[in-house]
Image (cartoon, rainbow, N blue to C red; front, side, top):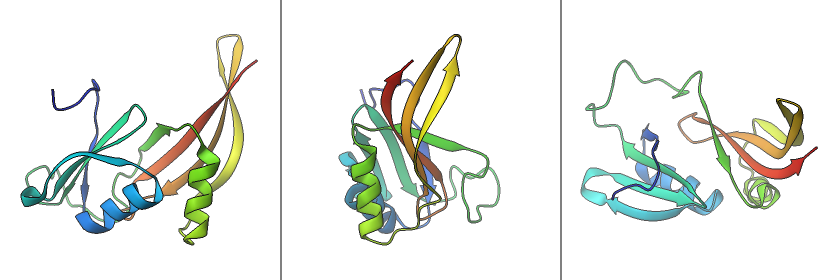
Length: 135
């Protein structure tokens, strides 16, 4: 099986090397497999999977212009949001929305997350979040 998830986003990126650097060296994703000849990589972080492929025209449904992915954000659950947030700050990577504690109501319970927003090099909005419990 190529992916373990039932839904795995594949993001078109303008520069595969720049995106790999961001996802691997800053967000701490690992390469599950790649096809260098296609400028493609499957990345994993915890139970999250994401595919990235340099724009090749095949998947385009319209004009791609920065920021890519307008209107969508990808929540990525991590074990230590503060660690990744600190890495981004260390390398002066711009943060869209600072690390904060948020509580979301589900029926009669509140579920907490420590989360922040960052845009990848092509402008995809990522919400990195850590579960902090319920009340």
